[in-house]
Length: 351
Image (tube, rainbow, N blue to C red; front, side):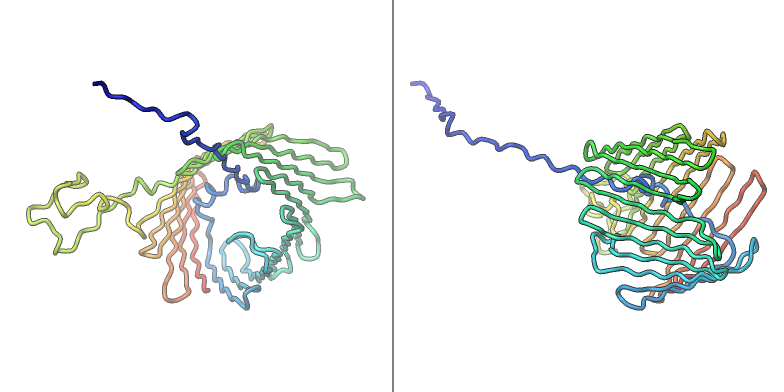
């Protein structure tokens, strides 16, 4: 007469296994906290520069640079780089030896070594003709979710002077990284230390970073704004709507000319990145605010970078590749309204 509802015993019900938490990523190096934002801004250009790159083998390459400038004497730089066989990532190869020698005899050299799976070492040397200016030694240990670095700069046992820098970064979540920097310097009659706290939050399309210490503050914001750049590619005439043209950007679901993907960013479309940077120096009593943008047009093989800052400076650099030739042309101009200074540059890179 009535319907009987059968219930399965508790033991027969499927049980959910324990949820596995994904390990936290390594936060990277302390020096790379603001890299995404800084890569948006254009580099300074002045005069005429010719760069010729030559790959001699899979491990060795050289570059010749000739620079003519109205602000200084013409110069020549020989840049050499050696990369070993141990590649941890597309941008990390060990051992790596990089050197740059100019026409005056000054040398900048850098050596990167992988001492163990998680331990890295770096040595930096800089000379001005026959005098040593900088010698620096770094040791970095990268754990599963943290990075610790110790730097020894210009150690002089006879003069009793040294600079010691300690960095530590810890991933608290997959998006949040916290850490700090301690700089200690000592020389005859002077000794001091500066502590800086750092934090970085990485979202899907933006990254915010902040450094705060007794020496000042440094904040940056990076945003990948591809979703805000839309363009419409017309359909072939065979798929065109027979009636009058429809208004954009309102799509018409019932019309075969418009599909949900017709308003999406097609492959190879423009790529826009925006960066905002704020720097305050308590010792110099100086504050700077900068805004930069990066526009990439893969279909045109062009990259455009621009900046505007609170010092009334405006600058832009346009790079254009010339396929099938291995040539890249770059044109830049910078104007300081406050000091009434203007300079421009042009460069040609071969290889």
